[in-house]
Image 1 (tube, rainbow, N blue to C red):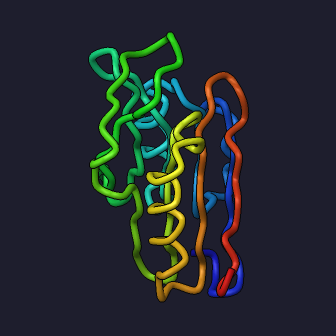
Image 2: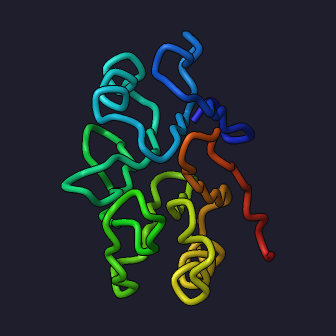
Length: 151
């Protein structure tokens, strides 16, 4: 992180939009290509990168940190563009490191009551002082929200 009092987040639609002064977090929309994510990772080594890429017809979450995808979650809901996984028993898409706790819900999965609530509860219960939830959306700039301590 930049320092313990700030987290610099860049919300972008492509890797060429990322500022040269490397942010702590880079957030891409749903449907971004793997190439864009790996281009960002190659130029911003320390950044955490969030997005959702299509794999085998399913939308798969990405939270890249240290060269590895730290969450394994596929979009559950059906939007008519990708296959419906429908599996709410997936591991909670939350990753903790240092002072950050980051959760990811892909687009319409924010409407899935139990899955969303499990993710939010997991973020809120983290001992990390920085609690963030990212919701990559199709063809839109992703929504970024800070979950305050004690909320």
